[in-house]
Length: 79
Image 1 (cartoon, rainbow, N blue to C red):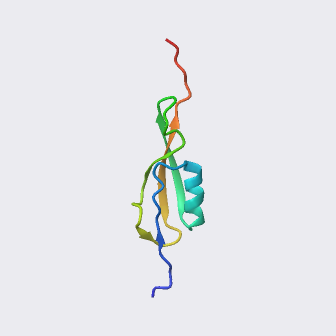
Image 2: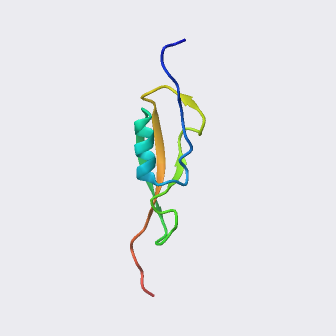
């Protein structure tokens, strides 16, 4: 064996962004979060919209994974 354990990347799309980042970090991955602005009140606010490594992929510890997390725009425009 190579001696380095492989980490199976979990699917975190649709889950809480902060919790997902914590989970991935605890697995030994380096997490980068990019925010995508959503419409005010969007149900995906704070949720993971996309991940850079497909779920189930085996990666080495210390690998970088990028998460795209939704952030609802808080600006309210009154008619």
